[in-house]
Image (cartoon, rainbow, N blue to C red; front, side, top):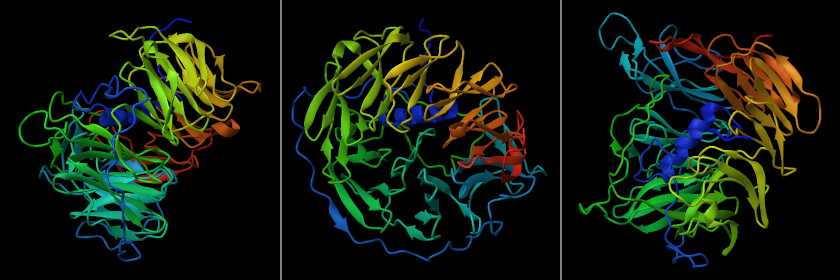
Length: 543
């Protein structure tokens, strides 16, 4: 197989971009915010013990809760009770910010007044993605509650239950199941200008069990870890310095921090490597993504990590990514290591120049591309499956892999693209199954893979069942989205787990629910103007 620009793609293109940019924001430090960082910081020797840990976390009292239901709308338009069927005002510009996978809530931006005085309510999209026209405001709609005008959606968990919002100068934690709202009075509200990244100071784990948030403290880096089931909190003192970014690992096992300690610029203060942001509602933006970059500004952040079970933070200059109960590290020579319970095991030698394509802590397996130990990395990069005691070359090369990909989804099948070829790496069998050239893998579920072959949608089963054709007129250049076992390949929705065509979406899909429902606007966006409301969750139409 020949190598030409292969990429990991076991989920949708939009998910790939989001995930890549998320890693960039955390890993890149002072490098460009557009291009992935090539490696983590390297400053220690294999086998060298970690530096002394910071003080142990302090237990805090459970935060006092506010009203047991959503408070009324505060001074802005439209008090409407929602079953989440028709969201937002009629026939006015609207842009989706985010939607829960279970369709329990939706956050959207909408213009509801003629703020520019031209006699119409309209928002235009410029050639570079900039918006012009009337002012957009953010709104939160939760099933069974009133629409709320908010200043910003800050963070949310993947289960669809929890939200953190900024409203009138307060950070509120919203439980969409019970309807309770808790003000996080000590949460750090400061923002950076990373448009593509999650909020720098608040992070949920994927299961919605914990919330990690930064606490402003002059001269010290401080955060709190909140258990969402009972509201109890523990304070984490990271030591002297400035806390730039906080993040919980996908599985919630690790609290990860980017801390500024050294005034490398010599200006007498610690500056973030990304500018601060003062303008509100910056997430209200058009369909054309814009990714600003900053190179060589501010001070360089260092990694500090802490397991959430014990919360004993320690600097980790060799950190690459969390890996279940362990950490993947990269030593000063470039070798990849796995550290668990204070012990280190070699995964990949330094001469591989490994970049992580996919990490699966549930199976103890990592897919890497070997770019070599030279700069720039080799154009043809052999792919290797590694784990404790395992080093298995898979017999094909891909193009330059970019930055390391952190663990998130842990599918059985991972799609890779060696040039025009397409392969499925089966992590259960630790084997490779070739597909046809130019096949595009849209989603996988267990042994099944949804594939677009030209304009045909079909399901391939690595356990030996015959390929099943689902549709023959899919859009070749159409958008792909994946939520749970459902996948969208314009214009169709497919339940991949049972190889079933669920239906067809008329109009542009804005979000895909875990039950296969589609979120659409009353009128689709055009090349130069936003979509128009209201938004509606609807089951796909019969194909």
